[in-house]
Image (cartoon, rainbow, N blue to C red; front, side, top):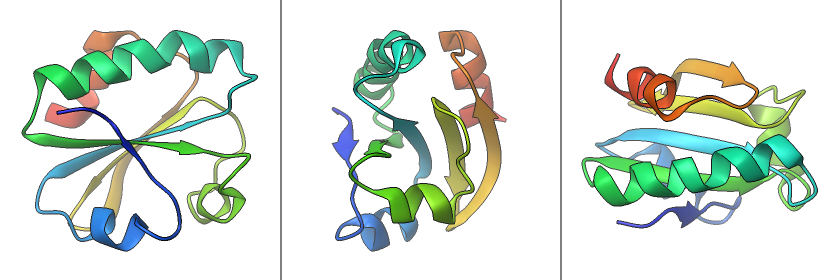
Length: 102
């Protein structure tokens, strides 16, 4: 399964997902975001049991604000519509998977 481009119009369906959700808050101009992006894509391809989405903070400032995103990249894991884990900065694949599995 590939990553889902998330915006304010489709966020409600993401929030109500039965699956654990990984949200990648990024911007195209952000170097560390470009390092994390292929890792997030890889996790999405290898783990169909998760819903993986990307949110461009420049295009969706309301969503970034709702999650309290101050720095990017920020990764957030949601279960049952609630954020259970959040991290800022580039993370290796093992740490991102640990966030999802924890």
